[in-house]
Image 1: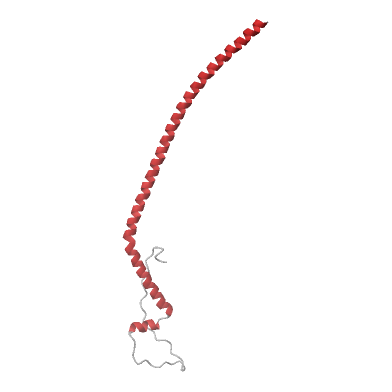
Image 2: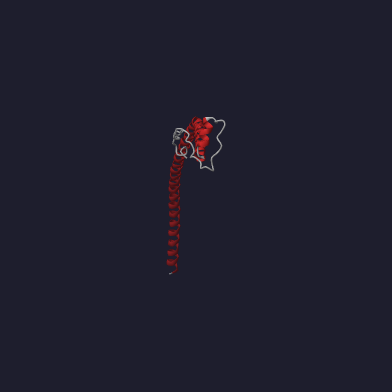
Amino acid sequence: QAAQQGYAAPPPPPTPAPTPPPAPGPEERPEPAKTKPCASVEVQADMPASQSFNRDQQQEFRSKLQAARQLLPELRAQRKKLSEAVKGIEAKGAELRQSCAEAEREGREDFEMLRGHLNSVESLKQAVLNREKDVRVRLIKSIDEFCQ
């Protein structure tokens, strides 16, 4: 858990001197050992199972931490590459936004030019229609005058 949070493992506690187990009652007294085992076996035998398990966990943690530290240069190199890729993507995004804005600007210019052209064509056609209407209205008046 300490490695996941970015903390270094705490140094292992000093190895306590073996303490003799409590004296067994008269009915529990074992036979005396004929040969004395080595000190490390004696320490492990005297330690409760949870301390031995913790020592195993600490050793496993240290080995995993060492393995993770060996990966750091490669991870840093990968991070640098990824960071450069992100900057490249951001630059491409900025270029895309710029080209889209330019295309939109050009599109608006083209639209305004076409709109102006359409307005002038509309005005011309409206003028022609108004002239035709005026001619027909005058003809109607002429016919009315003739008929009276």
